[in-house]
Picture (spheres, one colour):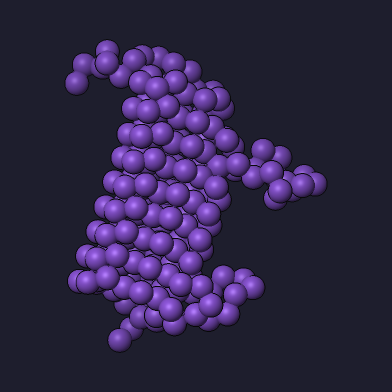
Length: 199
């Protein structure tokens, strides 16, 4: 056995755990086993993934290699998190969310059902990092149902992406995006409507 499971981790049926995985790692200020961790049926947790204690994770959860999931997150069914991605604490990932490789999902982000995050996407949550009170005013993005964020994009703190919108690759999103629109650029602006795309 080349993985570590801390006390008070509850695993569902048919869970695959790769080498050097750590499940239920206690966060700062908590003792081993103090906080319950639940992972549902049919999970595939690939090598070197670290999942902290206090996560509630549904069925059919998949990670790539070297994924880190911090504490106190709520993760739905059929969620996939790609290799090298970091999900910080107090994040909500609803059913069918797909986060590709090397993404960063900070504290207090909400990804609604079917949201899709491309590789190397960075979501931010501190408007003025290192300013007095910065930690008390963190605000992650809210990515609405079926919104899609292209590779290498950056979302500024507190951004709301409307349902079914599309963020073009490499965009810097500085303000809320209306539902059903296509935005791109730095700063990102509306360039089309989803219903007008040719495919």
